[in-house]
Length: 135
Image (cartoon, rainbow, N blue to C red):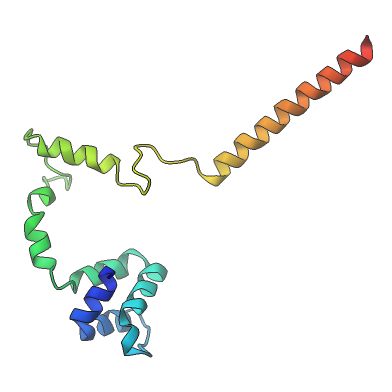
């Protein structure tokens, strides 16, 4: 069960209010979870924050993670030296989908690399052809 379906099942009126607050109208109350999913995929972070506000277990989740959410005056996570802060900093590096510290190359980077390789191979081919012609 997705978090959207969980929120919709436990607070259908709240789910409907979320959808209405972004200017959409609920047409099928049986699919509120799917509607929330689509709303978040279209609107993004503002809609996700609204869904989190209506999560039925929000208080216990916040209480459980209260130590991780402590911020200093600059709005950054506090570094108290307890080891937990260092662990959290390390975990933040692995928050991407594939679990690697660095991000995978994007499509434009891959395309540029492939284009460069084609140019190099073509240059070597032309130089080789010119060398054989001059012999």
